[in-house]
Length: 472
View 1 (tube, rainbow, N blue to C red):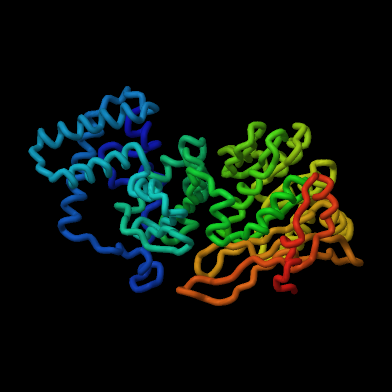
View 2: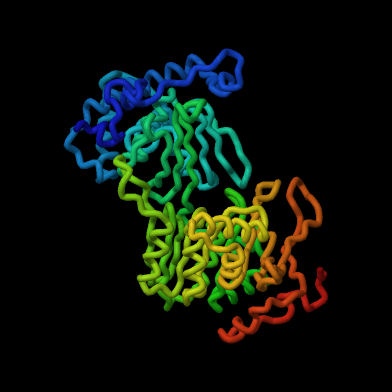
């Protein structure tokens, strides 16, 4: 196998303008003037100088690839990069190409990114201010910075170029993406989560969404600094985790659920055995005794699938002190409730929902998906008995993420699960297009305070608003 095939996961060496394989879909045509056609327009337009630069880049890149020893060990990235740089300088000298030092460095970095990295996306992946990358076809790339979407000033050559980069992502994981399997979930080497959708499912060309993995996990002090939590709420949540309460963190997409789960997992004592279960490993627990499990999709023969539910059931046989599930989105909710109700106190998970009340309704619906034909009341009793606390987080209009509800599950009255807010976010206004407000205590002490005190933790009454703060 040639070096390029090993590096790019099956791309063509001699013509980077062509798709990586015959199954790579061509650009989708659309009637002139239609919305799809406008989205596919090459914006921003390239100038003649840019076209000349692109031709130079392709010419040098092709000659470089043909000059590299195909037997070089591509796992030694530093050695490969050094070899590429030496050949790059040699080719420029042989062809008499005169470039300024910044232009030479820029050209080399772009070519190195094409060969060793993810092409045009590599600078965005290395930019720590970028939290999410969204590719809507070859010419439309957006990023999220500080919770706000911005258009990126980069483009791919064409849809075939996007497909080559996509193949490079999924090939090392044993996954595939083609017309018979037009969408895939994957993970980069640094843990960043990737979702890709290609034609015929996508009408704008290959669509790639990358949720970047934070190299340095966000700390609880940073959440307080950002205004996501208050020091009083942090002290309360730390006590809840140490006292082994069962907690569900809820919110919408991109609201910061996994980040908060990671922070709260840090409160777990270091002498406990923790089993984490995720679709894509994102949690960064610092404790010593952690077992990380990851689900697996079916292979090309539609076999070998391992679901979150399978892993939750298996985790019960692993003698865990705590089970931390990255997200429940299906019938695994019922098994999670069973784990919480059978001695695995202190378990935590996340769920998509619009409010604490919706969180309970969604868990009820997901439990029904297990097909056990259980009466509604039985499921609600399981929920009321298993879950102690729901923490709801939202992405606000100004792009900030804030905890807006910390709600206790108090039990049942008749057929209804009862809930009590312990903390509620109160917005007081807008300042410089930023939401002004604070997560305030409601003045109500939760019923599980005895459990917290039994753990040797004594919270001052001021945490619950007993020192003259506004009461609800």
